[in-house]
Image (cartoon, rainbow, N blue to C red; front, side, top):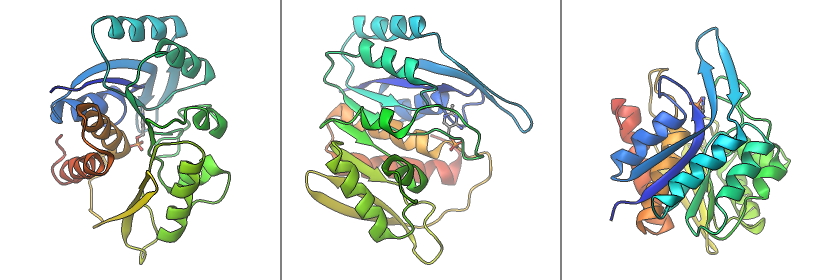
Amino acid sequence: MRPRVLLLAGLEPTGRAGLLADVAAVRARGGDAVAVPTAQTAQGTHTFAVVPAAPRMLTAQVTAAREWGVLHAVKWGVVPGPSQLATARAALKGTDAWWVVDPVVRSSRGQVLSRLSPRHYLALAGPRVVVTPNLDEAGWLLGRPAPGTVEEAQEAAEDLCRLGFGVVLVKGGHLPEGQGLADVLAFSGRMLVMRGRRLKRPPERRGTGCRLASALAAELGRGTGPEAAVRAAREHVTRYLRTGRD
Ligand SMILES: Cc1ncc(COP(=O)(O)O)c(N)n1
């Protein structure tokens, strides 16, 4: 079965991150991608700009996507502001697709991509909603300092489940040296620590969070359970970091 995945994300023209990276990951996982830009961005070495999508166009594109067939999963990447969030959400009313929410508000270089606040993300929580924060984002969502240990990452994952997310993946790629690298997955009362090795990467290999969430959406959309879906998505990102290809 080919999962049909709606990608709501910012367009970054090189495809290193954002919507084009999402499309590449979904296709590589054997899914059909429907790409709806929530914003246009420019992210050069000296140039940075974000222009939010017109809500009217967002509604039309999501509605048109639904007219062509069932959506099995929706991946939320950069959402520049509350009006894009509310519009996309309204246009998705009545779907029972998995949602994978990557609460990305800044680029890895620190540039601001979104004006959403934690409460906007917490309002998206639901039993078929996965949230995939990195450590900083997990702290930000919960209004406390970023977890600095695997135990704190587990506490954060538990707290995000308590706030209503069906599946929580706290990405520990930035745990301090000595803590090793570990992602924490919590769902249905279970807690898994998935360890890994830190990989050196060339600076242009960005968009790992985008790819992880999109590959995860494709797997969940296909009907894979959360644990196997997360493992497949992590393998996808590892391969991308090693080879630069999806
Ligand atoms: C449109 C868009 N979406 C996501 C990211 C995050 O990716 P990264 O963490 O690699 O900067 C980005 N920079 N731009």
